[in-house]
Length: 121
Image (cartoon, rainbow, N blue to C red; front, side, top):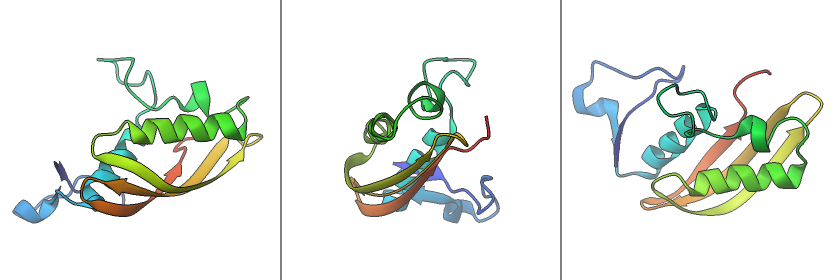
């Protein structure tokens, strides 16, 4: 697995040739999970079935258990993720916010992951 590395502000990095890529590492898989969570279900006009179902299963009227299962299932479906070792979350339904921290196991080893809904609705 190989992906273009993101800067701290979330942009692709350029100018360092091969150093701008993450390859075959836990950080590589964590970045794929992170960027996958940024894409909301129905947002990509070329395939409306791709993306994280934030509105459909996490934010709003959904309870904590439903939200946790939805996010965990989505994370487990990302290429390179083999298991979720730990998972804790806080759902603030009134503010429509969801925050979680997780430790995932990948094909290349374990890594930490922060999950949050990325927009105000």
